[in-house]
Length: 537
Image 1 (spheres, rainbow, N blue to C red):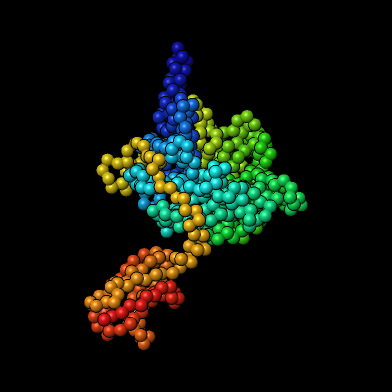
Image 2 (cartoon, one colour; image 1 turned 90 degrees about the vertical axis):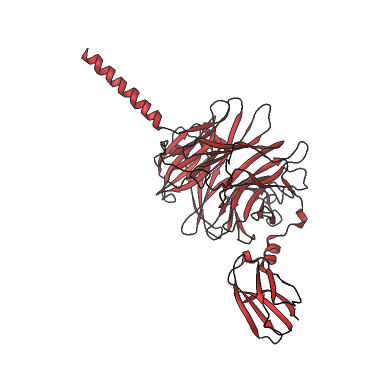
């Protein structure tokens, strides 16, 4: 009898412990409906400790629609938005400094019109601030915006694929201002500049510590020993300077006959980069980490054998790469020939000497896949689960790749929204987005940079008959160390003052100045960037 009571007591402890574990365990989370196919393309941590999930859904009866989910720190839905047009699917998001979020993808406004790349800005209240479609004339291409980044200046860069003169000029960067106006557009890795190449496609933009744009993706590149022959698919890296000029293109694997695609880039602290690529053939894809410098020279590369991760893994697609405390974490879809699962792999940081797999975790999901590091040193991972039809899967992991537990912190969400009662769940229309069609009128980066290098000045009233004249300036947001100087017709300096970045005008008291001709000059680091003449009567 005593032994029976002991067994019952032990079973009770097991049940209680299990229930306590389930109560504390809040991850993973699933989002979707059983009758739909729900997918996710990107995730990000918001300013308020919550998370954005960018996905889309479709069914046998509905075309794809973008689905933006905002959750709290524990993955519970706060609000969600469905984007409404005939067809739309989004690829990437980037939270903005003002509490909003930028989203890019492709959009078909109404039935029968062409599918165009598009960008939308959602404000801190979850409402549409602006949106724009990049229309173009080539009817045989199906372009889309693949990645988007906000710059420290508030300007925006957008990576667009299959845009323009297919299949030569297909990879473009657009630069927008904070209001969505196109500042410049330019093709990169073009077949015109790189004969023997074809159909470049970008996957991600990295804004480097030197404010350059580094793109990873793939390109079809002619083998040096087989001119005019078949072009093999190569992982590709493109470096673009801060003013939009292409510095170099690196097609990886041409010397070693390595075919594959590039997915991600990590910048090392000493100025070099790690490119995350795969190696074909498809049925046994391997991961390769490529170390290259800021001039596009490959320093070394290493292969990660699938069997080193787990004997059950025979192929893998590496999709994300982060440094977490004192280790690297590689994320992607790894598994058997028939099925791949979302997988995180912990690697020793000494990867270019010895590949040492410290731990790995495979769970639930498949492509698309993304992984991010949160501010409180957790790992957020996201994919499409295999439950039901197909649901969005989100998990938060600790440093040991264990599902995280409840975050007990008290947070105020969407605190930057100044409109009471918002944000709320609802719809956002993409049918009325602006349409940008002036391809021939878009300046190149060189034309744009030449234009903003000048600071036009306007003086009014001119002539000035009263005591005060107003001087208005353009482009000052692009300059620092500016000084306004005013001279009379004899070249004598009568007035000087600092002009601050973004300053648009100043008023001068000229009541004591003699009648005659004067000149106002803007100096930037000792170089004249703008001037205007005015008359005092």
